[in-house]
Amino acid sequence: MPRDPFETRVRETIRGRGMLAGGERVVAAVSGGPDSAALLAGLAALREELRLDLHVAHLNHGLRAEAAEDAEAVARLAEAAGCPYHGGAADVRAGAAREHRSIEDAARRARYAFLADVARRAGASVIATGHTLDDQAETVVMRLLRGSGPRGLAGIPPVRAHDGLRVIRPLIDTPRTEVAAYVARARLMVRDDATNRDLDILRNRVRLVLLPILQGYNPDVRGALVRLADVVRDEADAFDILAAPRIAAVLNGTDASVRVALEAFTELPAALQRRALREAVRRVSGNDAPVAFVHIEEARLGVLSGGPGTVWEAPGGVRIFRRPGAIEVTAARGGESGQAARP
Image (cartoon, rainbow, N blue to C red; front, side, top):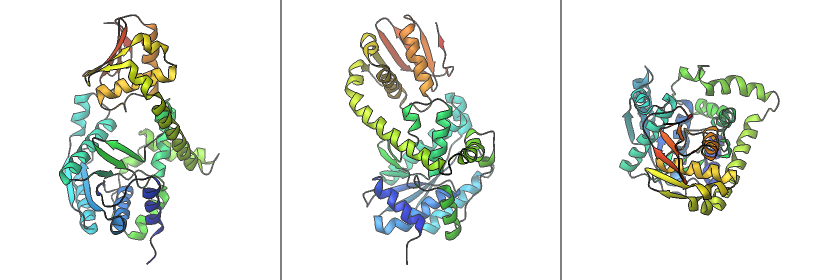
């Protein structure tokens, strides 16, 4: 029997982007929506060829009244695919308030922490998520609107390391229209999330309003944005490799506090200064996602022009201090103003 075109594309993405070598135990993140349901069905169809041991994980974020029904639906999808099911729950709103984060950021952090925990308990080395080509295009536009630098414009990495595991996006080359067509052909029972039509959410406005307008200028605008992300990511990866020794030379400290030698920092080109600050933020916070290009640039210019004692508070509870002869970056609770201040 010929393989479904959707499954063929998924296989090509896995092979072309080096996602799997074959024989891995994989945890598929499944929300119950069309994208993740198609991800599970596609991986299940390729299971024998790729010798996969496939598990299903679903986190109830505590944000939707229908969350319990979502979990039941995913459990049924896992059973139909012949996969072990791992369910969990998190109080995302409480976590967002406690950590001074947005609901979206808190949900993402809770989700990936849960997926990593499931993977470790299941003995898996890989987490698969259902991000599509459209998700990639939307992400690039959102980051462009927010003033991101190269790393932001690189979009969603098709493969990335996370907590000693590998996260892969097998649908990253697949348009959402093809996902929907596959869901219909395979008669998958999927859940409808009404928040995906809420225009108060930026991603939805980009998806439902802005991208259709841009499509009038370029019918393949989504493909163009995805190609941009791939090119920028490759360029940024190469630049990072070349820049790493010079950045490492100006940084020292522990996971709780990183000091940047001020004299050496000022001698770096602006692009390397930004990378040095971002690397310092990543080291103390474990994740630089909440800190955008504009935050790094404000901090860079601030520490260069400000005197000793200047403090800059970054999103995610990171503080950057101008010390005599050094810049100190520390992890701190609270404070998301992103404004320079004097103590």
